[in-house]
Image (cartoon, rainbow over all chains, first blue to last red):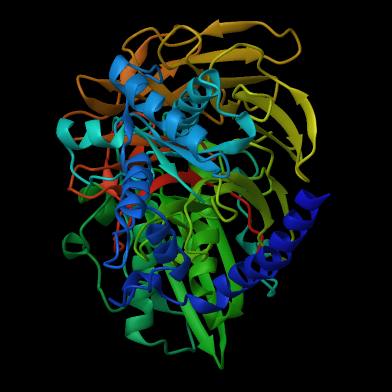
Length: 183
Length: 435
């Protein structure tokens, strides 16, 4: 019931937004060949999303609060990495995931979203599928370690959101990742 | 187009019009030899005095459009043996020897008059060796339809020479990052008239045209995850496919309001057949692993798709009624993005070999892949024009990814357009006029 209410609320906002988006597409763009140099402002929600990730400790924090924050930051900042065209977890990824499972057990109220990402090699469609496989394999490892499945959602970004824009193996290795966010 | 043209007045109808001649363009390998064609600057029709700039512009629209098809070699106007200010337009006045002697095998003359805001245009295609008119048309309409009239004549020319209506009413949808996000854009067949189609500041991917070109389906992160949106281009009605997991890479079934797409709500990525309103009709693939990127055979009986069921992504063909599946690609470890040719005989795809993506075409019968792009960084996302003569694709050959065109045989590779940002995932619409 509550879920339905939420979906209803989200749709309430999204549908008009979407309608607006589509209907203005025609009028807005007369000649996109000569697009102006003004970069559209980043959507404000993305900025707040970023601040939901890693947070810096503040001066008035106690030692204990700092430790809690550091553990949380580590959970958010440690990505797990994959081989090209693979969604299997190597021993290093399994170690990282074990720590994440510990943290999630210590913080039973937290729900997380696992993002699956790919490098730019290969092609968009297949990479979108591969990204989902990566996020799902991270999720099922956590579930095997006792984290409740309902606390973990997944989303694939394929090759669409690289963390490193480079076109070399170093960048690709960083981009083939599962990334954790607390929504 | 709201205006009705007075097309093909009786006196212009020529015998060869209804049945196309195929002597001019060898449809089996039409790009081996380009037909030399002369297109002199148009002239004013008797008792009118058209602006020189308009005459020149009109003849250039015609020659650019025909050159785009890659069937023709457009001859340099400087070599023409005619009075450039008053080229003769009709058979008795044309000295065909003048055209034969400079190597022209075909000749197009154009006459234009403008009364108020109304344009009248007479366009004729001649065979210079036979000294014979092949196509003659008269068009009338508002000045703003000038380009449409000329393109309509181009369709007649191509129909006469190849038996197909060509591509002059088609559009190309693609992704561009110029705004900072991946948004869908649409342009005319030749890269002109670029318009932004989505404007939602989210990731938008994989545009797909319905068979009547009235709908576009695509994948968007509008709702934070990849869902499919199916939008009517005219009235903006839309349907969504937003099941749990990914909803990606839609492909419209030929001549139906149905599409195939990959959904992962079942826990595995499978291809489903769906209605244009987003309801599942049936599941099309049944194998553990990723099944993505469906493309339909033109008869609608089969799909080709990508699967990693054998360990690496390869292209398979599935017969929908029998359920039989066969593997199509065996060379290399990464063959994706199949796109079935409109004639049904070939599938274009991209293949990752030695660290680079290149475009290949494989004949369905003999299964021999032919490589079409070489030594030009990454080349991806091939999509056929609706007449099967051209392939649009993306390439990083000049640095950032941009959209390029080549013939079905890999010749005449050129950039389609120049836009800020990077462009990817082009898809060619059917050749229909929905204006």
